[in-house]
Each structure stands twice: as structure tokens, then as C-alpha cells.
Image (cartoon, rainbow, N blue to C red; front, side):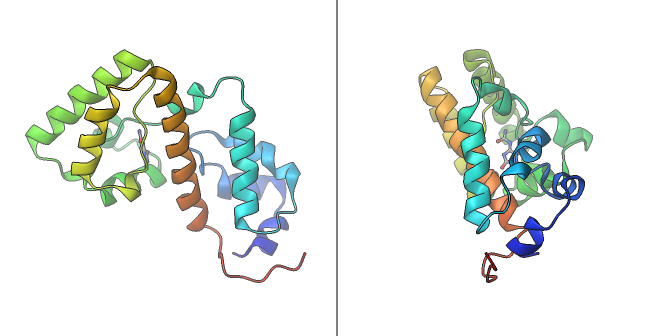
Length: 172
Ligand code: 2AL
């Protein structure tokens, strides 16, 4: 689908297709629909990013993210997008030492900050994710809140790129 096809989508189709570009936050997609037409994929991405930045409380978005290698992965209850991202980073095949370290650090992180650790899994492998999780536990809360939102935006960019052709000419 190119950006012209995106702009032509009725509201319901737009939300069905793009509703999970920010994990479990279809209200973001529903809100940016009224900003059509988008001149390009980066313009759609910018509209989402601006909406996120305008929220008075962005931590809610972080809380919509499942733990990496957490209960949802074990139970098979991840969203399709999250499952693919976690598998690509190797998080579905941790050895038992890695799995217990991940669980312990995820809990420590949530205990300290009150929201889950979020990182763009497709841009990292499991060793890098474990290292960053351990390092980021030491940060200040405001730093981590901002860092988590940056990662949400990276995840969103890659999900959008999986749905929209970027090199298509636009007719605007
Ligand atoms: C996730 C997720 O579901 N996909 C991804 O890239 N990162 N979750 C997380 N807690 O970072």
C-alpha cells in the first residue's frame, strides 16, 4: 500500500490496519486519521509522534507494552507484531540463565520506575537488550520515561514501514 492508498482509507479500515503501530493504543491511530491527507509516510509518523508528545501523561503508553520475554510470550498472548519483534531478537529462545536474568531485571525496572522497560527489539539482539535493561535500571525516572517514549517511536516507525511502501510517488 502506498501513501495515496493510505489517505483513501475509510476510518474503520485505517484503524484496523494501523491500530497497533503503537502497541495496544488504537486511540492514537483513531486520532491521527483526521489529519489526513499525509504527504508521505514520514508525515504520518510525525502526526503520531506529535500526538504522543501532546499527551499530558505518556507513561500510559509505556504500560501498554508487554514485558520482553515475559508472561505474554510464554502464554502465547502477545500481539502479532510484538511476537515477531521478540522472536527476531531471539527472546523466544533464551536459555534458563538468560530467562531468569530478564525476569529479575524486568521486575527491578518496574519496581523502580512504575512502568515497564521498553526497547525497540528489532534494532537489538538479546545480549544487547539484557545489557541495556541492566544499565537503564540505573537512570533517573524522567530520563527513562523519555527514553521509553523514544523507543516506542522507533517501534512505531518500523511497524509503519512494514505496512506502507516508502518509495511510492504521491499525488498531493
Ligand atoms: C516491545 C515489543 O513488544 N516490541 C518491541 O520492540 N518492544 N516491548 C518492550 N517492552 O520493549
